[in-house]
Image (tube, rainbow, N blue to C red; front, side, top):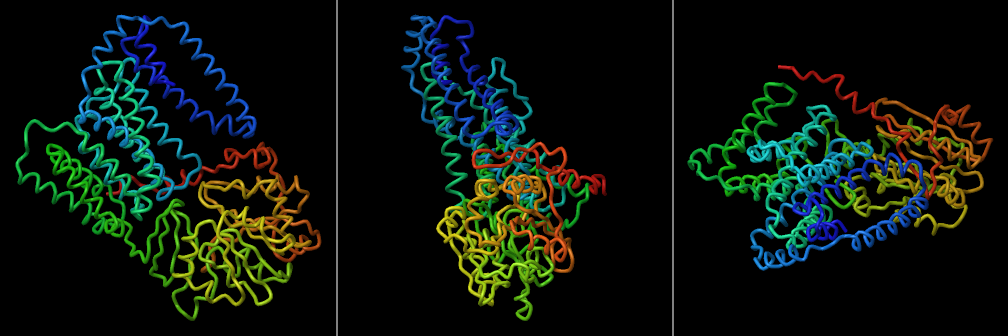
Length: 608
């Protein structure tokens, strides 16, 4: 629609017809406004049904407005004829390729920064808004009536790309506070997006009739960049190399230097890059300001020289991309037994120095297990015998005959299965089942039957007979990706139907950035259920975990309170969040950002 409007403006007699590209900036400004208002206004105060109704009305208004504008705009026939003559000059294939690559580079970069921050740095709620907002803002600044882009970004794009490549690995070293890493990734993303959008507006076609091809190639590049980042790379790589691929695309679009640099200088800079990426992380084990200054100075100087020859520059980036699996092991100082990536994220399995095998998904610990064969049947972590769920399954309060668990992890709860009490796991990701079966022993050593049902838990649970489970454990909440369809008043009705008459639903709500207690308190109140919470801290091999239980049996609830140290949970005074349903959910009222701020409290930036 923006393209059509720009075409009308270019062929009209209106003021501003000489620069119709300004409307593209306005279009992106509208997208930016929608990005900021949707999660903070529309999603928080409106149901999905209400949003759909508003969207339908506004869409009709948009169509009517465009029809009215089409009838009101007078076309300047001389401009149309002149544009038609100019259109006879063909656009070169090199120019088309440039538009395509620049369009792809920006999209690849903002998507990859989103992946890095949510997978490797911190699964902070709504953090995806920041990279997308930066991408849109770069379009606005470069396509507005008076484009703005600092000249030094264009001049030093080579070393900027080099420092961005370094930031990819530095984010995995965990020497800097989380919030500082996020800020640096965002700043560098702004630089690269400003560069790509500046190059696009500088290479725009001279004729408005070629504007369609210009925008088609930008859009096609963005589409291909999205496909590459979201679909292709997760199938061929176990690392987030799309970030480095985006840098390579941007680097290939650099303007060639007029003067060539001596070959020996280029080779020396290649060696400096190798030292920075391969040797520095092995020599520096803790934060020291001087070591960071030295590292960034070396990288800046080396890539500044390499940028004078795109062949060397591209070769170095390709080398870094190919060496990424090895480099990640060096920077993280971990030998991975297996690293698996799919559309749900990255799974890493490694053995630590304490004789424990670990499964990590992004930044979330999914389970741990002793390597010692004599100890490997001991459930650890969030599921140890002293954890809320462990003590509940050991006690005779529920005398469970069958337990259902949503979320497999390493299958630690299998250790609580009995010949008289099988456990059914509902797991969405088939790769999790393969990893838990092949690299962990919990399911193999289970003292009772263990079954794994693959697929969306809500759909799979619907196939189970009513009244099947004495306990239904919902353990699918980690990071910022809360599956709200598994924790709302509507799904609770379905859970209750699958419970035995005196059964209970148990939610694992341990989360660094979201507090689900008010949500469950509101849901329990609506369902006339008893609700209690239990928080057990770190102790030995037990990791701190918070669990919440909902039950309709007053006798068993009383035993939990008096014998099991569970604490009754009530709706917090002043909590304004609405009850979650299939048609409404918002995480804004339950976000806890204190975790990010804490990372700065102990950081001493001037440690020499």
